Image (cartoon, rainbow, N blue to C red; front, side, top):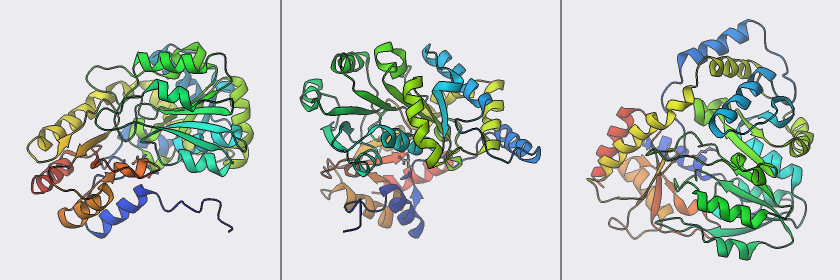
Length: 378
Ligand code: GLN
């Protein structure tokens, strides 16, 4: 009776990583790189710690980092955000998402999400009394039927949560999707929470489209990004939220009591690192090589590849191997074949199993080679 989230257990990412460790399996489940970040970035952290920057940052974040972020957004998306009043540094993407929802969602507000959906959206909305309306994107194309989405909109719709590029499907939104979205929200007060943490990991010369490129969307959006994904430092838990001043003001009212501020020397190090070079422009090439290596290897197995336009996750179908549901299959694959993955059904409320698992390819070459060797034997 005292639980506010009685249907929630431990996240699938923690579960699968634990199972991988217990079974000494290769961990392609939880999304994190198994290689080192750039040593220059590490040196900057060391430098700022030793120089004495070890106390609180301003609650919105260090201005030097916020300026670099504004420059990045301007360069990548030709959109202007005021560094001081429209950008807030957060303890990773997840905290930014939590804070935006906490700041705006009241009891009985409706929030539209697209499944497969990252696992934190729904419980966070529910914690604040919101009601989730979902559109299910389905294998193998994960297309959005915008007419169906329109059917979910009501006068109670307060927010639409997007995840573009989508984790786990690897799908990116196209211009036509964005135009449909604009059609839905214009002349309404619907807010958008746009989780774009994989924005710089988009393949085959395709372009990530950010909500901030469209004034009609920018004015109502919280744009969420993550340095963990950008610079291979998921354990640093640092990201940001860019939003127009009126939304940022609300965001910070919660942020100040939620974390107040985040790690000072790391903010300074990131700012210095971003000043020197636009490292993130190489990220798509870097990860595309890994994706292609994994896909080429899997082509010789009984697994079937789904498209992967972005993120560092590859969806694979295992219909030819087993008719188990994906949760059981992922367990079996970890225990018997020593490769841990994430079942796609964990991204659906109704645990829809379309026999698809997610493999993370943000891994060293040796790790991918070893995993492919094991997967070839399945
Ligand atoms: N974003 C990571 C993933 O999708 C997981 C992060 C976490 O474990 N909370 O695997």
